[in-house]
Image (cartoon, rainbow, N blue to C red; front, side, top):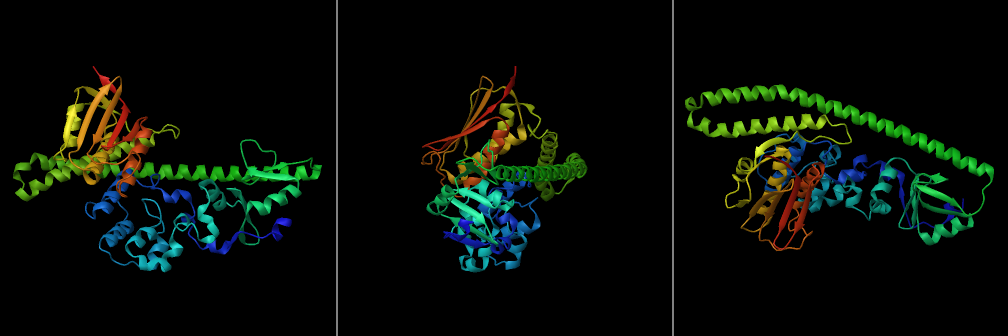
Length: 426
């Protein structure tokens, strides 16, 4: 094969990639682990990382220890990163650690995600998400930006366009990325003949296509089976949590009946206990309704009927100095838990990263609830003022999209507008 004798632009040994944790090759590891971790846990972890204060309740112990070590500027052994390569917030734990301990760059380089070291490993980290997934799934041919990648003799080789394209023309073929229709697929590539092929060559390519289809079908079945198993485990855990939450609720009610008999210190802590139990109830209820979804249209939460003034009074209470305007008070039907979470994220961002005064304007017109959060920060739309805003806004955008709503950003002054379809009760 002429390509095997052609000069290569870069190469990386397959053994080097095999020594990397598989999760450090997957593009999905660069994003918050929303499919594996409850949104409330990610929110708590995100807030703790910003302030080095607050609750880490629900965060797995090893990741809680990691956040505490970062805040205290305490060193961690190399073995910890080998056991826990990926952060719940996306990206590698090594990358976050190196922001505080840059002197450990050499020791921790192998625990970085390939996206976090794009120039290493022959440029593997520069591959697109689709190509990187294909590489992890065992494909041996990739095409990106005119460069041809090929796995050969335990190496990944990259050929520049001016090298491989003349060889393809000599072989009377053209290589493109596989589309919806391809007579001769070659992994992620499509082979387009420039002249008629012999019958045996067509047959060979046809058999290759059939084997590829069978392999993909098997992989798809395995993935679906794994998703069903994971879903069952989450359903079981959610069901089991409802009993201890109910028991805690009974304890809170018992304390409430004997509130006046409690010592003053216990009375001051009762409110926090009751609020925490109520949040746990809401989370369990929201999870229960989500797990009833059929997979194509998952149900985040059964909407509740509430007066806007009563709901918003509870929302704005923790934000002294907030200027609040409600155009019209009426009863609406809302997914309260998730809408409250989104609005709290926007208010937290405004108070933490913006400039006073912070304003909340609420209106309802023609079946649409509009929540507008603004502050006097001066920056252009689409530009983040602080690096810590990313996860909070990502969570809000994803949840609002699930609720068929929309989040827009404008400025200056900085304004986030949350629009949500919402029925009213006349």
